[in-house]
Image (cartoon, rainbow, N blue to C red; front, side):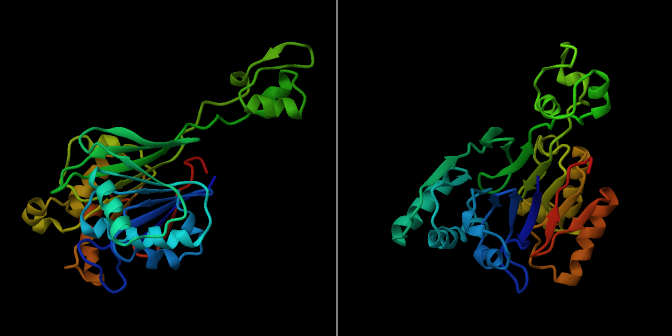
Length: 311
């Protein structure tokens, strides 16, 4: 099952040529999940060869303009295709106010249902569930109520050992499939064979985390723990720590500390301050890699596959 991230924008505060505002699209088989939706998100989406108008859920971290002003365009463009499933929008309470006000003021034509899920920004919670995975939120510390998100898959069945099934007298064919599906079957001699007799230990699913616009907040490292991919803001170099604290943002070094303490597999920095030209972003990367070597600079248009650990 495919899981991959598409970086739609990496800039914080204001867009720059070649650097749109922070947004990430996650694709899990036929489902698309959008994390934040700043100005110009639809431009980035149109560059992708995806059925992006069928986005399933949009997760909003907070209601600052550089994270939500692309929503009206996405809602209107999504009306250009037929869809029966609702578009779910998840975010702190003012997300609902923003969406409803724009629909009213712009008199939008919307040909599909919209469901808005209010997230309590003070309490960790499960905000969305579907078959095989769930999305959780976690409080951050910014100038407005703000949350981080993780998408975490269920554990997978362990590896099937056909030689053990054969030794126990289970003939190759449909009975093997039933064992792999968790069913107990009868062998050729009539003895019952349980799945745990021919299957390895359950295997971990994958985990994606999205953290932006915060100072170091309690529990964030634990929240993203074990992520295969963490996308985390690294807005400033450490020399500007006081400015980061004042504006309630992370430095690249602080992002790396979260990744290290959470034992994530890899981290892409995002939400760069517009003060850094493209060639200057290497300062942020170098500072982060001193603490967490598996850091990379996310780039607009980048595609990041998220494989299972055992692949």
